[in-house]
Image (cartoon, rainbow, N blue to C red):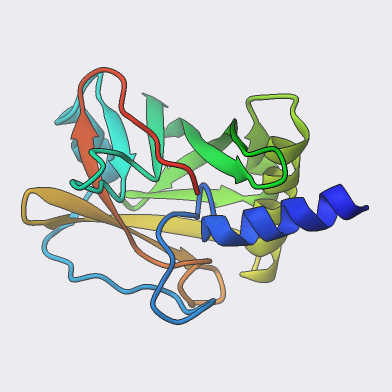
Length: 185
């Protein structure tokens, strides 16, 4: 039980993997970022073939909060989001992976709770998967992500079926070739 409480603390400090990147200035407040032109997710992915999306790039450490690889087949999108979770009691970090199968609707990527799985069999990835599923259920059962241009990067803006920003709110994306350095959350 103590390990689950510690894991919950670690998970909360992620400010959410998958929906989870940089913490907003106010705890549990959704982050809203400046947005430019709205983009169709299919066009965005077509413009960046064979690249990964670096979530909330930090120049100081040349690292990403998480990295997303995506495959698009017809109207279905399969995204694998990887991140590092700090394990304070062990003085180490664990790689976690959340997999989301989305349906493309009106240029957005939409997912329901059952569309979220894990790429690993580790306890923390499973715990994160359950948290994300619960958050989607609380948000009305479906979350749709819209994509926007923002200078030399992009903004992903997830909104629940209840009309409110999902989890932490907006995140910045930039596309990278090859592996990207992850920072511990």
